[in-house]
Amino acid sequence: MTPARDQHDHTACVRWRAAWILPIIEPAIRAGWLDVVDGRVVRVGHAGDEPCGVVIDDERDLGRVAVLPGLINAHTHLELSFLHDRVPPAPSLPDWVRVLMCERAVASDDPVPPIREAVRQLEAFGTAAVGDIGNTRAAVTPLIESALYAVSFHELLGFSGGDARAVVAGTRATIQTIETRGRVREALAAHAPYSTSPELFLAIVQVSREQPNARVSVHLGESAEEVEFLYTSGGSWRELLEELGMWPEGWRAPGCRPVELLDQLGWLAPTTLVAHGVQLDDEELHMLANAGATLVTCPRSNQWVGVGPPPVDRFHASGVRVAVGTDSLASAPDLNVFTELAEIRRLAPAVPAAALLRWATLNGAQALGFDELGAVQPGRVSRLLSVELPTAVDDVEECLVQGVSPDRLSWIA
Ligand SMILES: [Zn+2]
Image 1 (cartoon, rainbow, N blue to C red):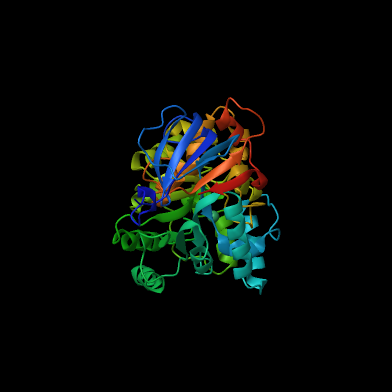
Image 2 (cartoon, helix red, strand yellow; image 1 turned 135 degrees about the vertical axis):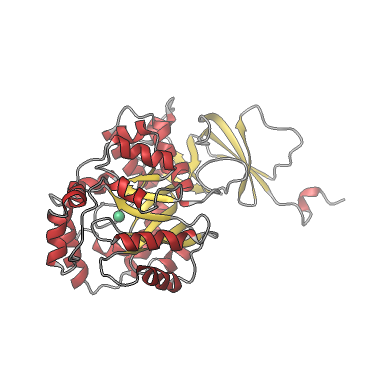
């Protein structure tokens, strides 16, 4: 006598209807529906093509909204959240870093409360996952305690001699293991070619590759001074290293472009995330594309730190997988990826809005290795956003890349 829906082995199926559904992996669906069972999407379709014989336990019409996957912020530094509004825009990256290092050195703040507030904001801005870089593990516990998926990159830098492999192995031991499963994973990162020895780069990638699918991250091609440093071993980065007593006597410039250096160091792979790339030429972008690596663009931060806007049109034309990051609260006013998308749209009005939304969702999820995120598709988790639309819209994708304030957002399911 007991109907099937009341038996223990039945998991409730909820059908959500919306004016628009953006699967990302296929064109936007006007008047769409999706079925969710046990936190996973099981079916997606257009009104009128609902299958027969499916038990729907609850049906909810969200109305004039667009449903899309939670966004991916593929490059941030949560541990710098306490520096919000303390490091002003600068004319060059070395100048900006000089102030950042001074502020960091004198700060006595507990970094954890600002990290918790930043995590709360990330969720309110519609973020499902982050690629977070840290020199400490201060953000790991706040991330575990949140609903965010994360790859927490432990970043290494320095030119000091010694056994780079032992240094990296020691770091790996402190993070227990390089996790490639689970919602919060730990991984290794190099800071940048002007701050990190080639030996350290090599050791990071070698130790990471012991674990299949482990991600690595690096800041690359951010400032013109970096390219100058790689060709001449001179310029503002050398001056700063000398000021800090970090200049490695006997260091020789590799005499090549940033991506060529990455290639020589064995870093070009689908598991590599390259942040910024503002200075990269077309040949370098094609090298990244051919390797399947991801370029994470952070346009507001680039302009804040004085390296200028990224060549977003060339990124798109190159075929490289592009993801979106905000960088930290030390160089961006907030961690809102929708606002980052609006800046990208301003810089590159010709790139299709659907491509930009893919950058901020599926591409970031693939870059970080979260196959369950990034699209509205059967089998993926239902970490989905509902965005109120201002009026009836015909080009929903264009509407979404114009910026979305948190008061128009809610999480469904
Ligand atoms: Zn960064």
